Length: 411
Image (cartoon, rainbow, N blue to C red; front, side):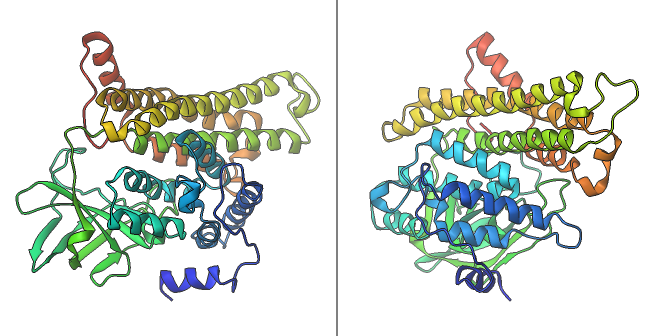
């Protein structure tokens, strides 16, 4: 059964008795039940012998048209600001960080579509978003070229009135589940371009070969493009001179903030579930132990701080997006600066919290069946997308010397 056939069977109700008809908005009463259902699905898939991909969750999201959150209501969307989008992403990551991460490229592309010049191509792409279709990515290459620049070995070669696409991409998060894939490539003159093609088009091969220590079911595997036909209106050249990519980076920390909410919830459940403690503990019951309660309070505060930082940085994204038509580089730089600052703090905060979780659980919390190590592994995987030390150095250089942050794919 192909991915598309499986998704069609789920969406038709053949394997799903929970229906959330969209489009949902950030204040829709159906949003919380949808997130609760996704969390139940994630819990079920964590059980021994049942581990697997979140096909059902993605089917629910398609039906709810959660991917259309950012579209204006008059265009069939949820009318969400970027701050409101991040609030939902954080809650979605609390329910299932894999699912939240899967949608990263989709939401980034949706914002690109919204900023694109008016026309038939833009209208068609927004119509597909409004219909619940999902967009994935094929951006990263493993080559000798520096990470973050815009030179690609994947090529778009002229073919009549269109192109032929050839190349291999790695870490194609979400593309396994997507209807469309955005591919970065170089044109004949070496200039960067992007193409959006259906994942079902002949020559597109999506491998489920991601073997990371965390974010295991994000579909972040290899995608091959073997002589794929690409129409002219599916290609757009990219202006990298004024481009910042803060939204792409901040999104990862929205997912991490959601994971920290789960860390707090799991810590509270551990305290409530423990029947015994140490003979030298400060209280007879773990749930009354002031030292353990202090740890839980600090974990809760870390989750709150991470969420507040991400949402504050999202406000800068909103300001930059509102001015996108005028191409205000200062607002774009501010958005990148806030996202970079968020990363430097949230990475460290989250990794420490995911480790301290074990302090409230005793040795039983280290059992593999408890799966509490998943939080650290997921955070570590997300944080490894780009090194925090390079971000901190660039921020310091800006503060001391006034040098702007780099204009590349990682800022």
